[in-house]
Image (cartoon, rainbow, N blue to C red; front, side):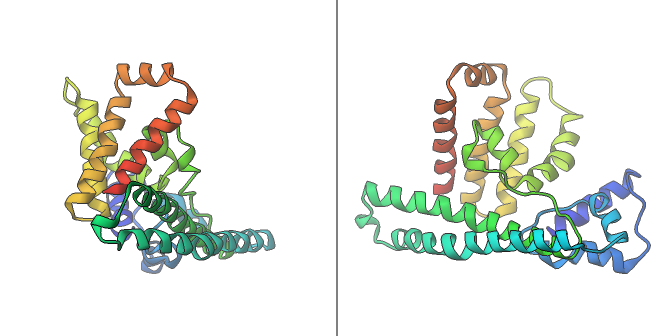
Length: 248
């Protein structure tokens, strides 16, 4: 988040979308604000600048923040950590002992763990900030009910998706190739998304799996196909791809 926020700040100042911050304390507070320091949400300076000028939390803010922190703790400690025990037990089994039922058990347990752990952290970060009078943007919106991979990324790590859209995808679109330019730009964005999660071939594969299907969904044929099939089938299609990605 620190790198992404610093990049967005530099670009926005360069484009004269925001004035450069002359107060070093405010800039350091924005960059190193501890609730969002590790895993986000990723916040643009223009979205938090006004809040930094009028810091102050009312009773309602403190109550809402504490409730959100409690939700995050329940997600992470009471559910994600326990489900993670199951996932790790399967992952640590000898390969010869992982039958299909254990493989599915491990994959489903990991899918629950990664969502509740990450969204739980976001809940805690948003709650801590709210207690201090800062409203951070939402980062998750029930991603496993998505009806397409495009919809999944509108719901999963929302602030990361917005950052890549604003600072990578839109600039690429302004110089789009004539044929399949949009699809190529989508693949570039998701290649970078995979690399952001880890400089490892597994993460590249994971990013490109999502990129390929979003590129398909952005074509006329992909949109027609999605509109033609029923909502339950769209949901199954989405979950199959998401779960396949989690394998990597």
